[in-house]
Image (tube, rainbow, N blue to C red; front, top):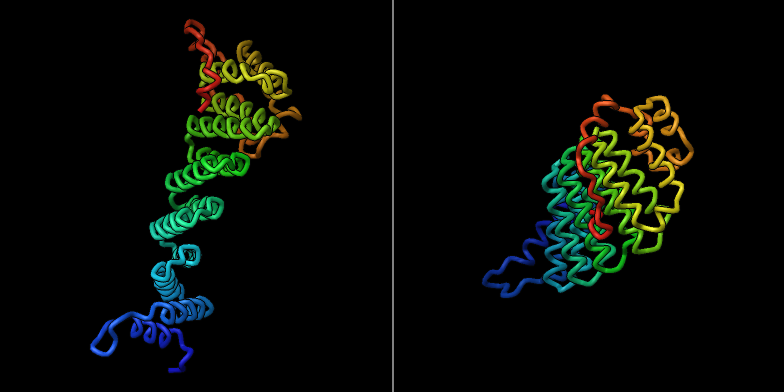
Length: 296
């Protein structure tokens, strides 16, 4: 076995960290270097399972050397290897641990990025867990004043909710996106998010909630004066009139064409269900506008 063979490197590293009668203290600095070399060797050989284990040990070594930043990077690499192996629970665990290590050394952006990487890897296999990682990534950014960077993450989470048919949750995340946009003065993104939420509610046959959402969002001056508000108003009026052709016409408008693709696809399918039934279900119910501070 060649000295540079990854398996040999692992053996050498293990010997350096195993205490014995002749070794009273572990040599983590030398061992960690060997683990790193072995991990890269395994990765090049596409032995992802061995590479994952080696990266995990390299991460532990960097922690022992009080280097959480390097430990986090290795933990991300372990997550990437787990993705290659379709070991989705491990993907989640490795990227979450990487994020924790980045937080430990005061790096909020990489901490959020690590969770987002894990979320993207999990979207198809574990969509609910992916959404939670996206939400946690947003929280990290917002706590550090990075609302603008959170916008794309809210958008990604919304897309996953739509894919799995959880439209109420999707609308909720669009409203959170709007709040994040408001905090960083991104009025255009804010207005698109609010119109998107209204469309999602309509797609889900929830005319009452769509109206409440519109009324609440219209308390915000930026949305009140926007093209998106005008479009939403016309759309709701068409629903009230039961005018299917007008609904279809508005769904093809340039204002809706400028929304995110995930929302455009829903809008193009409007109206769904019985428009007259949706209107009748809300005819005798009180309308309560949403609180501007409760658009979550």
